[in-house]
Length: 317
Image (tube, rainbow, N blue to C red):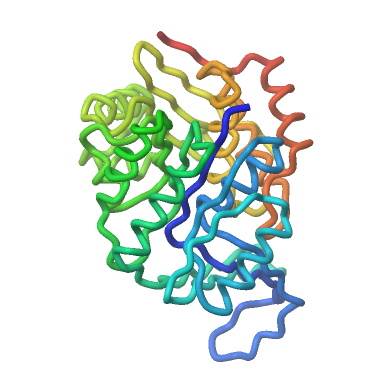
């Protein structure tokens, strides 16, 4: 089985709870909180592990929150490779308003990592006796981190023959231009920001994804279209996948679940079409779970099998 490593440069100890109504200046009586290890690459690792893949989660870890974070992640069964840091692992919290069904998500900035800590993280994710076949770098960057850090990761990954999958945003995403990643997964809004124009229809969206590929952002560009599914552009291939309809639930982790399913399917030597479908199924499955709970394997397999039988992919090569 192909090996996957995830790198999360700014993980978070996620606290989630619920209250009847969110009102300013009021004391809000909340339900018992739930603590989980979170952050883009952490969520990807948890989903890959839940889906039966071989994965190791690499992340910075510091302070009391870091100790709690590491224990919780180990308790999930995910193999871990924490890198000690001087700062404290950040926290974030989610509040579900039960009267309206609205969800409020509060994300804190996280610790600043020094050059030695960053270098140790890069060496940990690319080193070891059994180097990964795929590296998934997912999530936000810590404060003050050079957005070009993924270029260095790409160079290190290339030396071991690993494919780099990146799911990030803002300056870190923009800095990928020039041939860094093997695969990126921006949202439609992020693609519009990168190409500098609004993308009104399918033809415009496909052309923009092709432009990103031509500008060297990645060999494979997967655009998340939310309720409209996903678009994939690669050499000689254009795939458009409609969303899989499921009852609306919590969207926490849906994008990370999609990346996990997509990467795991590619690592299992599935075709781009099958991998995209599996990724969309994993993202849809995340909507079926409450709060910050991530994708369940049985949901992914059920949704994937049903969609595969339906044959809903539009393939233009």
